[in-house]
Length: 110
Image (spheres, rainbow, N blue to C red):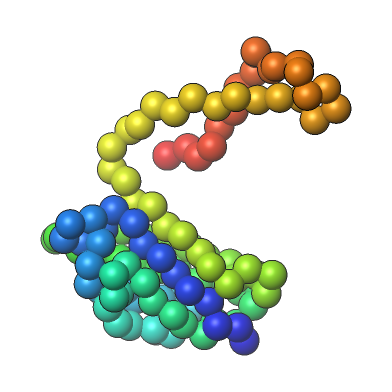
């Protein structure tokens, strides 16, 4: 078991506040139920198990999963509902001045 910190962005009143969080294990047993404080909760979970996180705010429900690893103690969740365009500059690992101009990069997909 490890202590981890979960930080939630873009949820609740004024993007983060007190949001109700429920964490379930793989058998849907309730591990944690509480509210965030400034978007943060600290919880103790077993390593290498999948947990379901349910976030209730502003009459909305968002579900996501987490698989705690003992090498990481901070986990960040951004529930941004807007599509934002970002620009990435990709460089070759072995040639610092060689820019990568073609290809496809998928950061996440709905």
